[in-house]
Length: 440
Image 1 (spheres, rainbow, N blue to C red):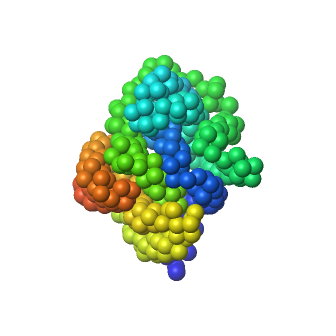
Image 2: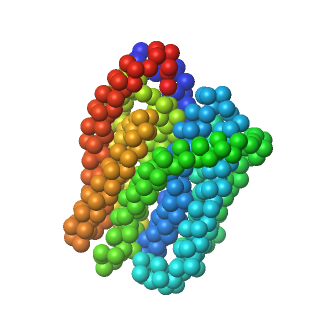
Image 3: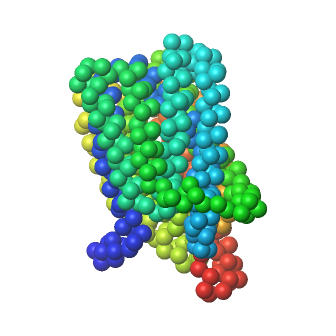
Protein backbone atom coordinates (compact mmCIF):
# COMPACT_ATOMS: atom_id res chain seq x y z
CA UNK A 1 0.00 0.00 0.00
CA UNK A 2 2.83 2.42 0.85
CA UNK A 3 4.36 1.69 -2.55
CA UNK A 4 1.10 2.66 -4.29
CA UNK A 5 0.77 5.85 -2.24
CA UNK A 6 4.36 6.87 -3.02
CA UNK A 7 3.82 6.18 -6.70
CA UNK A 8 0.58 8.19 -6.80
CA UNK A 9 2.36 11.33 -5.55
CA UNK A 10 4.93 11.40 -8.34
CA UNK A 11 4.41 14.02 -11.09
CA UNK A 12 5.12 11.44 -13.77
CA UNK A 13 2.37 9.18 -12.44
CA UNK A 14 -0.05 12.09 -12.15
CA UNK A 15 0.55 12.92 -15.80
CA UNK A 16 -0.03 9.29 -16.74
CA UNK A 17 -3.24 9.40 -14.71
CA UNK A 18 -4.42 12.50 -16.60
CA UNK A 19 -3.85 10.93 -19.98
CA UNK A 20 -5.16 7.56 -18.84
CA UNK A 21 -8.32 9.18 -17.47
CA UNK A 22 -8.86 10.95 -20.77
CA UNK A 23 -8.18 7.77 -22.72
CA UNK A 24 -10.44 5.67 -20.50
CA UNK A 25 -13.23 8.21 -20.78
CA UNK A 26 -12.62 8.40 -24.50
CA UNK A 27 -12.54 4.63 -24.71
CA UNK A 28 -15.89 4.39 -22.92
CA UNK A 29 -17.38 6.81 -25.44
CA UNK A 30 -15.65 5.01 -28.31
CA UNK A 31 -16.85 1.66 -26.94
CA UNK A 32 -20.44 2.86 -27.23
CA UNK A 33 -19.89 4.37 -30.69
CA UNK A 34 -18.25 1.29 -32.21
CA UNK A 35 -20.79 -0.88 -30.42
CA UNK A 36 -23.60 1.03 -32.12
CA UNK A 37 -21.87 0.64 -35.48
CA UNK A 38 -21.24 -3.06 -34.89
CA UNK A 39 -24.80 -3.94 -33.86
CA UNK A 40 -26.27 -1.75 -36.63
CA UNK A 41 -24.34 -3.35 -39.51
CA UNK A 42 -24.20 -6.91 -40.72
CA UNK A 43 -20.79 -8.57 -40.96
CA UNK A 44 -20.42 -7.84 -44.69
CA UNK A 45 -20.86 -4.03 -44.57
CA UNK A 46 -19.01 -3.88 -41.25
CA UNK A 47 -16.06 -5.56 -42.94
CA UNK A 48 -16.06 -2.90 -45.68
CA UNK A 49 -16.22 -0.11 -43.09
CA UNK A 50 -13.36 -1.59 -41.02
CA UNK A 51 -11.25 -1.93 -44.18
CA UNK A 52 -11.84 1.69 -45.21
CA UNK A 53 -11.07 2.93 -41.69
CA UNK A 54 -7.85 0.89 -41.66
CA UNK A 55 -6.81 2.41 -45.00
CA UNK A 56 -7.43 5.96 -43.72
CA UNK A 57 -5.37 5.43 -40.58
CA UNK A 58 -2.59 3.78 -42.57
CA UNK A 59 -2.32 6.79 -44.90
CA UNK A 60 -2.27 9.15 -41.91
CA UNK A 61 0.39 7.12 -40.10
CA UNK A 62 2.47 6.85 -43.26
CA UNK A 63 2.53 10.64 -43.46
CA UNK A 64 3.96 10.76 -39.93
CA UNK A 65 7.27 9.67 -41.49
CA UNK A 66 8.62 9.10 -37.99
CA UNK A 67 8.45 12.84 -37.29
CA UNK A 68 6.21 12.72 -34.22
CA UNK A 69 8.64 10.73 -32.12
CA UNK A 70 11.78 12.58 -33.21
CA UNK A 71 10.28 16.04 -32.91
CA UNK A 72 9.16 15.26 -29.35
CA UNK A 73 12.66 14.09 -28.41
CA UNK A 74 14.47 17.06 -29.98
CA UNK A 75 11.88 19.60 -28.82
CA UNK A 76 12.55 18.49 -25.25
CA UNK A 77 16.31 18.60 -25.88
CA UNK A 78 16.14 22.17 -27.21
CA UNK A 79 13.94 23.34 -24.35
CA UNK A 80 16.31 21.85 -21.79
CA UNK A 81 19.15 23.70 -23.55
CA UNK A 82 17.29 27.00 -23.10
CA UNK A 83 16.03 27.47 -26.67
CA UNK A 84 12.19 27.33 -26.47
CA UNK A 85 11.72 29.71 -29.42
CA UNK A 86 13.90 27.54 -31.65
CA UNK A 87 11.92 24.52 -30.47
CA UNK A 88 8.68 26.13 -31.70
CA UNK A 89 10.28 26.99 -35.05
CA UNK A 90 11.30 23.36 -35.38
CA UNK A 91 7.73 22.19 -34.68
CA UNK A 92 6.40 24.48 -37.42
CA UNK A 93 8.89 23.06 -39.91
CA UNK A 94 7.71 19.55 -38.99
CA UNK A 95 4.07 20.52 -39.62
CA UNK A 96 4.73 21.74 -43.18
CA UNK A 97 6.84 18.69 -43.92
CA UNK A 98 4.16 16.37 -42.60
CA UNK A 99 1.41 18.04 -44.65
CA UNK A 100 3.54 17.74 -47.79
CA UNK A 101 4.08 14.02 -47.23
CA UNK A 102 0.40 13.40 -46.36
CA UNK A 103 -0.80 15.34 -49.42
CA UNK A 104 1.53 13.45 -51.74
CA UNK A 105 0.56 10.01 -50.44
CA UNK A 106 -3.18 10.73 -50.22
CA UNK A 107 -3.17 12.26 -53.69
CA UNK A 108 -1.45 9.20 -55.14
CA UNK A 109 -4.05 6.92 -53.52
CA UNK A 110 -6.87 9.08 -54.94
CA UNK A 111 -5.44 8.79 -58.45
CA UNK A 112 -5.14 5.00 -58.20
CA UNK A 113 -8.36 4.50 -56.21
CA UNK A 114 -10.11 2.40 -58.86
CA UNK A 115 -7.47 -0.35 -59.21
CA UNK A 116 -6.92 -0.35 -55.43
CA UNK A 117 -10.62 -0.91 -54.78
CA UNK A 118 -10.82 -3.56 -57.49
CA UNK A 119 -7.82 -5.57 -56.32
CA UNK A 120 -7.99 -5.14 -52.54
CA UNK A 121 -11.55 -4.27 -51.56
CA UNK A 122 -12.96 -6.28 -54.48
CA UNK A 123 -15.70 -3.67 -54.64
CA UNK A 124 -15.39 -1.18 -57.54
CA UNK A 125 -18.44 0.68 -56.20
CA UNK A 126 -16.42 1.72 -53.14
CA UNK A 127 -14.15 4.04 -55.17
CA UNK A 128 -15.96 7.18 -54.00
CA UNK A 129 -15.75 6.22 -50.35
CA UNK A 130 -12.08 5.28 -50.72
CA UNK A 131 -11.28 8.70 -52.17
CA UNK A 132 -13.11 10.33 -49.29
CA UNK A 133 -11.07 8.48 -46.69
CA UNK A 134 -7.92 9.69 -48.48
CA UNK A 135 -9.10 13.24 -47.79
CA UNK A 136 -9.96 12.24 -44.23
CA UNK A 137 -6.39 11.01 -43.80
CA UNK A 138 -5.17 14.61 -44.07
CA UNK A 139 -7.34 15.55 -41.10
CA UNK A 140 -6.07 12.54 -39.16
CA UNK A 141 -2.50 13.52 -39.98
CA UNK A 142 -2.91 17.05 -38.62
CA UNK A 143 -4.70 15.71 -35.52
CA UNK A 144 -1.80 13.32 -34.87
CA UNK A 145 0.59 16.28 -35.17
CA UNK A 146 -1.51 18.24 -32.64
CA UNK A 147 -1.36 15.32 -30.22
CA UNK A 148 2.42 15.12 -30.58
CA UNK A 149 2.70 18.89 -30.04
CA UNK A 150 0.76 18.67 -26.78
CA UNK A 151 2.95 15.74 -25.77
CA UNK A 152 6.13 17.69 -26.52
CA UNK A 153 4.87 20.70 -24.55
CA UNK A 154 3.66 18.32 -21.81
CA UNK A 155 0.11 19.69 -22.01
CA UNK A 156 -1.25 16.39 -20.77
CA UNK A 157 -4.44 17.86 -19.31
CA UNK A 158 -5.43 19.35 -22.66
CA UNK A 159 -4.31 16.15 -24.37
CA UNK A 160 -6.79 14.17 -22.28
CA UNK A 161 -9.62 16.69 -22.75
CA UNK A 162 -9.30 16.94 -26.52
CA UNK A 163 -8.86 13.19 -26.98
CA UNK A 164 -12.03 12.55 -24.97
CA UNK A 165 -13.77 15.36 -26.84
CA UNK A 166 -12.99 13.73 -30.18
CA UNK A 167 -14.58 10.48 -29.03
CA UNK A 168 -17.59 12.38 -27.70
CA UNK A 169 -18.13 14.08 -31.07
CA UNK A 170 -17.92 10.69 -32.79
CA UNK A 171 -20.46 9.17 -30.39
CA UNK A 172 -22.89 12.07 -30.83
CA UNK A 173 -22.73 11.82 -34.62
CA UNK A 174 -23.15 8.04 -34.60
CA UNK A 175 -26.00 8.30 -32.08
CA UNK A 176 -27.83 10.85 -34.25
CA UNK A 177 -27.47 8.59 -37.29
CA UNK A 178 -28.78 5.58 -35.38
CA UNK A 179 -31.71 7.61 -34.03
CA UNK A 180 -32.56 8.75 -37.57
CA UNK A 181 -32.09 5.20 -38.95
CA UNK A 182 -29.44 6.56 -41.32
CA UNK A 183 -26.40 4.63 -40.13
CA UNK A 184 -24.78 2.71 -42.98
CA UNK A 185 -21.29 2.29 -44.39
CA UNK A 186 -21.34 5.65 -46.18
CA UNK A 187 -22.57 7.71 -43.22
CA UNK A 188 -20.18 5.90 -40.85
CA UNK A 189 -17.32 6.84 -43.18
CA UNK A 190 -18.45 10.48 -43.17
CA UNK A 191 -18.22 10.44 -39.37
CA UNK A 192 -14.67 9.07 -39.20
CA UNK A 193 -13.61 11.65 -41.78
CA UNK A 194 -15.13 14.63 -39.95
CA UNK A 195 -14.01 13.90 -36.38
CA UNK A 196 -10.20 14.28 -36.85
CA UNK A 197 -10.71 17.71 -38.44
CA UNK A 198 -12.64 18.80 -35.34
CA UNK A 199 -9.84 17.54 -33.09
CA UNK A 200 -7.18 19.24 -35.22
CA UNK A 201 -9.01 22.56 -34.95
CA UNK A 202 -9.14 22.26 -31.15
CA UNK A 203 -5.46 21.32 -30.97
CA UNK A 204 -4.40 24.20 -33.22
CA UNK A 205 -6.06 26.70 -30.88
CA UNK A 206 -3.52 25.70 -28.20
CA UNK A 207 -0.48 26.58 -30.29
CA UNK A 208 1.38 29.51 -28.69
CA UNK A 209 2.08 32.69 -30.72
CA UNK A 210 5.74 31.68 -30.95
CA UNK A 211 4.71 28.68 -33.06
CA UNK A 212 3.89 31.05 -35.92
CA UNK A 213 6.40 33.84 -35.18
CA UNK A 214 9.51 31.91 -34.13
CA UNK A 215 12.50 32.08 -36.45
CA UNK A 216 15.60 29.92 -36.30
CA UNK A 217 18.94 30.66 -37.91
CA UNK A 218 18.84 28.88 -41.32
CA UNK A 219 22.13 27.11 -40.70
CA UNK A 220 20.93 25.89 -37.31
CA UNK A 221 17.60 24.78 -38.81
CA UNK A 222 19.50 22.80 -41.41
CA UNK A 223 21.65 21.22 -38.71
CA UNK A 224 18.65 20.28 -36.61
CA UNK A 225 16.77 18.94 -39.63
CA UNK A 226 19.73 16.77 -40.58
CA UNK A 227 20.00 15.58 -37.00
CA UNK A 228 16.34 14.67 -36.95
CA UNK A 229 16.56 12.90 -40.30
CA UNK A 230 19.34 10.69 -38.96
CA UNK A 231 16.88 9.21 -36.46
CA UNK A 232 13.66 9.73 -38.39
CA UNK A 233 14.57 7.43 -41.29
CA UNK A 234 14.71 4.49 -38.89
CA UNK A 235 11.61 5.50 -36.97
CA UNK A 236 9.81 5.99 -40.28
CA UNK A 237 10.60 2.43 -41.29
CA UNK A 238 9.42 1.26 -37.88
CA UNK A 239 6.22 3.30 -38.15
CA UNK A 240 5.35 1.93 -41.58
CA UNK A 241 6.16 -1.59 -40.47
CA UNK A 242 3.98 -1.21 -37.37
CA UNK A 243 1.15 0.22 -39.48
CA UNK A 244 1.36 -2.80 -41.76
CA UNK A 245 1.42 -5.16 -38.79
CA UNK A 246 -1.64 -3.49 -37.25
CA UNK A 247 -3.67 -3.86 -40.45
CA UNK A 248 -2.03 -6.79 -42.20
CA UNK A 249 -4.57 -9.23 -40.79
CA UNK A 250 -7.40 -7.20 -42.32
CA UNK A 251 -5.70 -7.02 -45.72
CA UNK A 252 -4.90 -10.74 -45.81
CA UNK A 253 -8.29 -11.86 -44.51
CA UNK A 254 -9.97 -10.09 -47.42
CA UNK A 255 -7.71 -11.72 -49.98
CA UNK A 256 -7.23 -15.23 -48.58
CA UNK A 257 -10.77 -16.23 -47.56
CA UNK A 258 -13.91 -16.75 -49.63
CA UNK A 259 -15.97 -14.60 -47.27
CA UNK A 260 -13.37 -11.92 -46.67
CA UNK A 261 -15.72 -9.18 -45.50
CA UNK A 262 -17.44 -11.50 -43.04
CA UNK A 263 -14.11 -12.61 -41.53
CA UNK A 264 -12.96 -8.98 -41.32
CA UNK A 265 -16.25 -8.15 -39.62
CA UNK A 266 -15.64 -10.88 -37.01
CA UNK A 267 -12.13 -9.53 -36.42
CA UNK A 268 -13.40 -5.94 -36.39
CA UNK A 269 -15.95 -6.68 -33.68
CA UNK A 270 -13.32 -8.32 -31.47
CA UNK A 271 -10.82 -5.52 -32.09
CA UNK A 272 -13.36 -2.77 -31.43
CA UNK A 273 -14.24 -4.15 -28.01
CA UNK A 274 -10.58 -4.75 -27.10
CA UNK A 275 -9.52 -1.13 -27.56
CA UNK A 276 -9.29 -0.36 -23.83
CA UNK A 277 -5.83 -1.92 -23.65
CA UNK A 278 -4.30 -0.06 -26.63
CA UNK A 279 -5.63 3.18 -25.15
CA UNK A 280 -4.01 2.43 -21.80
CA UNK A 281 -0.79 1.70 -23.67
CA UNK A 282 -1.14 5.01 -25.48
CA UNK A 283 -1.63 6.90 -22.22
CA UNK A 284 1.48 5.42 -20.63
CA UNK A 285 3.56 5.86 -23.79
CA UNK A 286 2.38 9.45 -24.28
CA UNK A 287 3.69 10.54 -20.88
CA UNK A 288 6.79 8.35 -20.73
CA UNK A 289 8.22 9.08 -24.19
CA UNK A 290 9.74 12.47 -23.22
CA UNK A 291 11.02 10.92 -19.97
CA UNK A 292 12.44 7.60 -21.15
CA UNK A 293 13.89 8.99 -24.39
CA UNK A 294 16.21 11.09 -22.19
CA UNK A 295 16.98 8.40 -19.58
CA UNK A 296 20.47 6.95 -19.90
CA UNK A 297 21.43 6.19 -16.31
CA UNK A 298 21.43 2.58 -15.16
CA UNK A 299 19.75 3.18 -11.79
CA UNK A 300 16.88 5.13 -13.36
CA UNK A 301 16.40 2.52 -16.10
CA UNK A 302 16.14 -0.26 -13.51
CA UNK A 303 13.75 1.79 -11.38
CA UNK A 304 11.37 2.26 -14.31
CA UNK A 305 11.45 -1.46 -15.13
CA UNK A 306 10.72 -2.35 -11.51
CA UNK A 307 7.63 -0.12 -11.59
CA UNK A 308 6.31 -2.07 -14.58
CA UNK A 309 7.11 -5.38 -12.88
CA UNK A 310 5.14 -4.41 -9.77
CA UNK A 311 2.17 -3.27 -11.86
CA UNK A 312 2.05 -6.52 -13.87
CA UNK A 313 -0.35 -8.36 -11.48
CA UNK A 314 -2.90 -5.56 -11.80
CA UNK A 315 -2.62 -5.79 -15.57
CA UNK A 316 -3.22 -9.56 -15.45
CA UNK A 317 -6.35 -9.06 -13.33
CA UNK A 318 -7.67 -6.58 -15.89
CA UNK A 319 -7.07 -9.06 -18.72
CA UNK A 320 -8.91 -11.80 -16.84
CA UNK A 321 -11.93 -9.60 -16.13
CA UNK A 322 -12.09 -8.45 -19.77
CA UNK A 323 -12.08 -12.05 -21.03
CA UNK A 324 -14.83 -13.14 -18.64
CA UNK A 325 -16.99 -10.16 -19.60
CA UNK A 326 -16.48 -10.85 -23.31
CA UNK A 327 -17.63 -14.46 -23.01
CA UNK A 328 -20.81 -13.26 -21.35
CA UNK A 329 -21.43 -10.39 -23.77
CA UNK A 330 -20.56 -11.51 -27.33
CA UNK A 331 -23.20 -14.29 -27.64
CA UNK A 332 -25.91 -11.63 -27.25
CA UNK A 333 -24.78 -9.42 -30.16
CA UNK A 334 -27.17 -9.66 -33.13
CA UNK A 335 -28.48 -13.05 -32.12
CA UNK A 336 -25.03 -14.65 -31.86
CA UNK A 337 -23.72 -13.46 -35.25
CA UNK A 338 -20.46 -12.36 -33.63
CA UNK A 339 -20.09 -15.30 -31.24
CA UNK A 340 -16.90 -16.40 -33.03
CA UNK A 341 -15.39 -13.01 -32.22
CA UNK A 342 -15.01 -13.89 -28.54
CA UNK A 343 -12.10 -16.29 -29.15
CA UNK A 344 -10.37 -13.69 -31.31
CA UNK A 345 -10.99 -11.15 -28.54
CA UNK A 346 -9.24 -13.38 -25.96
CA UNK A 347 -6.05 -13.54 -28.03
CA UNK A 348 -6.14 -9.84 -28.92
CA UNK A 349 -6.53 -8.73 -25.31
CA UNK A 350 -3.61 -10.84 -24.12
CA UNK A 351 -1.46 -9.52 -26.97
CA UNK A 352 -2.51 -5.91 -26.38
CA UNK A 353 -1.72 -6.24 -22.66
CA UNK A 354 1.86 -7.19 -23.51
CA UNK A 355 2.14 -3.94 -25.49
CA UNK A 356 1.43 -2.00 -22.29
CA UNK A 357 4.94 -3.00 -21.22
CA UNK A 358 6.66 -3.37 -24.60
CA UNK A 359 5.88 0.06 -26.04
CA UNK A 360 7.30 2.25 -23.23
CA UNK A 361 10.39 0.06 -22.79
CA UNK A 362 11.20 0.40 -26.48
CA UNK A 363 11.85 4.12 -25.87
CA UNK A 364 15.15 3.24 -24.16
CA UNK A 365 16.48 2.47 -27.63
CA UNK A 366 15.78 6.09 -28.58
CA UNK A 367 17.59 7.37 -25.49
CA UNK A 368 20.77 5.68 -26.69
CA UNK A 369 20.08 6.66 -30.33
CA UNK A 370 19.56 3.06 -31.43
CA UNK A 371 16.26 3.41 -33.38
CA UNK A 372 17.57 0.86 -35.89
CA UNK A 373 17.16 -1.81 -33.21
CA UNK A 374 13.43 -1.11 -33.19
CA UNK A 375 13.31 -1.19 -36.98
CA UNK A 376 14.87 -4.65 -37.09
CA UNK A 377 12.50 -5.82 -34.37
CA UNK A 378 9.46 -4.55 -36.26
CA UNK A 379 10.61 -6.03 -39.56
CA UNK A 380 11.02 -9.38 -37.83
CA UNK A 381 7.53 -9.02 -36.38
CA UNK A 382 6.15 -8.30 -39.85
CA UNK A 383 7.76 -11.43 -41.30
CA UNK A 384 6.42 -13.50 -38.40
CA UNK A 385 2.96 -12.00 -38.83
CA UNK A 386 2.87 -12.76 -42.55
CA UNK A 387 4.08 -16.31 -41.99
CA UNK A 388 1.45 -17.09 -39.36
CA UNK A 389 -1.36 -15.52 -41.39
CA UNK A 390 -0.44 -17.32 -44.61
CA UNK A 391 -0.36 -20.67 -42.83
CA UNK A 392 -3.41 -20.25 -40.56
CA UNK A 393 -5.89 -17.92 -42.30
CA UNK A 394 -7.13 -20.50 -44.86
CA UNK A 395 -8.25 -22.82 -42.05
CA UNK A 396 -8.82 -20.54 -39.03
CA UNK A 397 -10.00 -17.31 -40.67
CA UNK A 398 -10.25 -14.40 -38.23
CA UNK A 399 -8.88 -16.54 -35.37
CA UNK A 400 -5.53 -16.59 -37.18
CA UNK A 401 -5.35 -12.80 -36.69
CA UNK A 402 -5.59 -13.29 -32.94
CA UNK A 403 -2.81 -15.89 -33.00
CA UNK A 404 -0.52 -13.62 -35.03
CA UNK A 405 -1.23 -10.60 -32.80
CA UNK A 406 -0.26 -12.50 -29.67
CA UNK A 407 2.78 -14.11 -31.30
CA UNK A 408 4.38 -10.89 -32.58
CA UNK A 409 4.00 -9.20 -29.20
CA UNK A 410 5.57 -12.12 -27.36
CA UNK A 411 8.45 -11.91 -29.83
CA UNK A 412 8.81 -8.16 -29.15
CA UNK A 413 8.89 -8.76 -25.39
CA UNK A 414 11.71 -11.31 -25.72
CA UNK A 415 13.63 -9.10 -28.19
CA UNK A 416 13.46 -6.04 -25.93
CA UNK A 417 14.52 -8.07 -22.90
CA UNK A 418 17.80 -8.86 -24.69
CA UNK A 419 18.10 -5.28 -26.01
CA UNK A 420 17.59 -3.87 -22.52
CA UNK A 421 20.48 -5.96 -21.25
CA UNK A 422 22.78 -4.46 -23.88
CA UNK A 423 21.54 -0.94 -23.13
CA UNK A 424 22.31 -1.41 -19.43
CA UNK A 425 25.92 -2.13 -20.35
CA UNK A 426 25.98 1.03 -22.47
CA UNK A 427 24.45 2.95 -19.56
CA UNK A 428 27.34 1.90 -17.34
CA UNK A 429 29.80 3.42 -19.81
CA UNK A 430 27.76 6.64 -20.13
CA UNK A 431 27.52 7.06 -16.35
CA UNK A 432 31.22 6.40 -15.84
CA UNK A 433 32.39 8.74 -18.58
CA UNK A 434 30.14 11.73 -17.82
CA UNK A 435 30.31 14.12 -14.93
CA UNK A 436 27.97 13.46 -11.98
CA UNK A 437 26.01 16.64 -12.72
CA UNK A 438 25.21 15.68 -16.30
CA UNK A 439 21.76 14.25 -15.81
CA UNK A 440 20.06 13.55 -19.15
